[in-house]
Image (cartoon, rainbow, N blue to C red):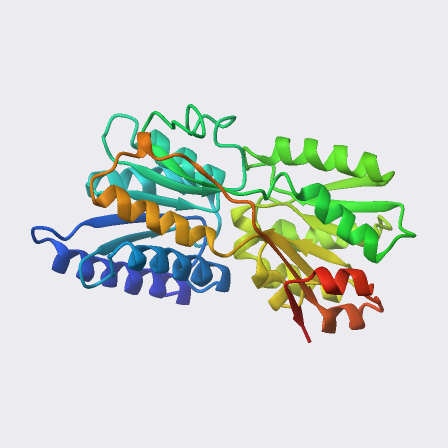
Length: 330
């Protein structure tokens, strides 16, 4: 039996155990739907923030709350509908969907004929995607937090350009299986045009594609790589960081785990977003309706620079950029 399958079985058994203990009056069960794996640091960070918010709202897993976890493990979006439907069959009180547009779309579809609320955390426009009617009055069974991860893609381009002002070409990595990819591409094209940069667009839809992407990068002459927000890329943060370093490619992604694993920079929404999702789940469990809870617009972003990687790539980080960083990894 493969290690990952074994871990999945153990994780499922643990969830069943907790849920079984929680099947008593007054102890709710919520569902957690995620494109990822509990082994990945970014997943652990996400859960830590969620649990922090739940605790602030008075809910502690294993004490007065149970969580049913549903992971795709390999970033396979095709499994999300099945996993979301299973949470609905379990009649969970709330479904949590953080970090992936396809995850929230699957949760929305699965709960369409139910009263189960969905609390999301997304880097895309929730109105444009049809998650909610408006930011102030969601109107349906979905609400949550919208951060700036798509809107700040041009800023990631600027950061790379600031590090390598002589470069005339930048590459971008997207997952065309992600419904947000077209909007991400549109934003990146506008940003690169404003900077006078040629944009080379590369795609990866599964783990096998990622190594091929970096082989293609070697022949493009790109001065940097912007990795767009996507659940698959979150799972593969460490691999992406290692490949970028091996191919001597300055790269920026949204999650701190990327910089921690050796990527040059991370620039994205604050790690407190998941905490707000947890707070909203707590409010719903106490009786508030998702339709009445405004979507929170997160505006805080974090810049993390890995100076060890910069040195390995022969990059001197400008003092102005060092001063703007929220964290420097030595």
